[in-house]
Length: 429
Image (cartoon, rainbow, N blue to C red; front, side):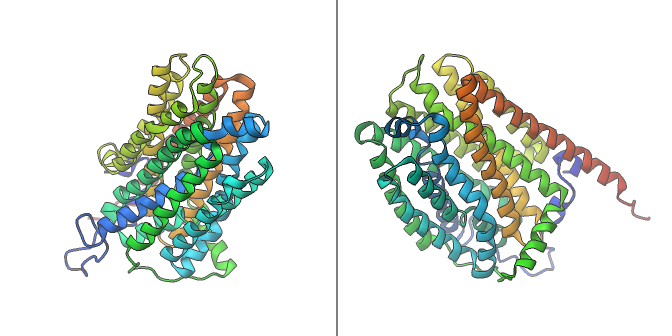
């Protein structure tokens, strides 16, 4: 597969060459090999806990608005504060994982996030709730970058997209189950009990994660010196391919954050006027994301990275436009397409980051996650503001602009790859 066909640079395929037949056997994990299933299930559970906690208030925003007497744009900060906290702290947490190990940092992050999650139901005011959610997001920052760095070090290159896809699939299951559970529990007992139940589920996931995840075998401790960290960060930001991938992740998440922050308000208002439990069940469409993320590896194999990103963006845009129709079945179909496109695009972009970075993988992944969750915070706040100003059409307009950005960046990447290919010297015969 040529660089031009993927929309990436030749670096992506060059950084992880398969070992030659006379080299030392690759001891990293692969599907069917020792520890692979345990590792996959452990990180799947970590993904479940991360998204269930991170977005635990998203389906409950109308109830939170009602209890505290605030508008959608204010209640949306309970989501934006969590994703913003994660975005701000993911880089420092990645530095800790370079020094103390991926598994150690992931375990500590989950433990703190779960502890805060058990305090969230007792928040006496919207201000306190936002602060607790920001702390929870900051704690969860140790998960995403450390997980992808762990996979890049412990899994064979050919299985990396699939392995990261399974972790992202865990994100989708966590996001779906968290919203469905909170919707039905809140309908009977209120939003406080609902987020408490999510905290209990996250406790179980955190314990199982720690028991199942194999000890790392290929980790080498790095430095905590700020100068070393900043040199690594500057090196990653100087890479045009990585910059494009970071922007793509942010734009995809802008769409997703905006849509799922506002959809509860749209469906509880006329003409739909659905009860909270039914609105929570709408998030079952996350199962589509589970499938699209876990099959991202095969999608890249058939279409190339550029083709996969175009398909993901086109699917997302089609879903946005379809959701404008005031028909519940068509709105649901639109959500299915948005979800499938988002999770496929995210899995493709995040796995490309892990394959591209030759050193400081945790920092490379951290920068992607930071951009990704900045996109989530922006999508939550801008999407809610657009909904307040122009209704659902305003939120859709924000999403369509973000998808157009993804397409434009991918086109620029394709052109850059073709220029780089023409500049390569022709080997002498």
